[in-house]
Length: 381
Image (cartoon, rainbow, N blue to C red; front, side, top):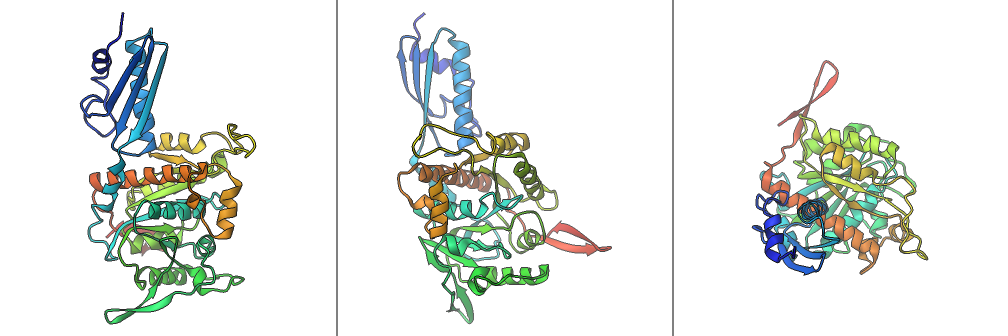
């Protein structure tokens, strides 16, 4: 039996795109159906750059076509994203946010140290800036600030500017990103030995006594783990959503699971935008088609499925990422490289999840912390 384009459209009448509420055909996503004997070639045009939605759409469409046309020997599905898909991330803003002019506040967290959380934060920030967004980074890792080095501003000092009747700190800017860090106020060899209340006070000063101006995104580079600093941040700010960074091995995934659980607690309820997998695989420069899964394969991807949160993307182990961080020029600035494309894909997925979160969920509220019988209790304001 000869297959026609109408046969293909009819076969996909009951297949809908995640979150679209319409079939693939009705949504207009199904385009350029080409039939070559027993081979099918289809273009899917999506309105969201979210990787997990693209993969889900490809998988559902292919499975349905294989079911309907068992004699087809080859099915090629190409997905692309409408160019304007990321623009809607600039709106709507969080209502009732405590920092005027800041639209979205994204916490970048990890369950444990050493998984590349700050590296992901820095490259996410410059990727957003390259897309045309106004971006700021607050280095909230009080005890191990590394953002100043990654942005090549370690020797800079924030100046004071007059805003109305008040004097405020002016963030340091590089690569189109505004940056504040406790690292600007301490000597390179000085250890920050502060108890929780002092660290929280310093953070509040960098948050509220800074002149951030208009920002589409303020990224918070949180310390590793789940502790006092995290609660202080969520007490001070209504967080739009959180990105959890992990490597593929089990010891990191166990802690990443706890990080996701912290944000999902009933008393906190910060939406988890997704999980990003860093150091996903190693590809030698001399063998560009080879992938070596040094720390395990697709561990973070599988964790995201287990926890029913989006998988945002994977970043390979590449020497240039480490070198770029040490030199203070994030690797995402290296145009048309595999690393730049990996960070761009991750960033587009984050933006898509922010769009979905702002459209479908109520604004996040800051939490309040009370003490009862010597135990901390976390409640919504």
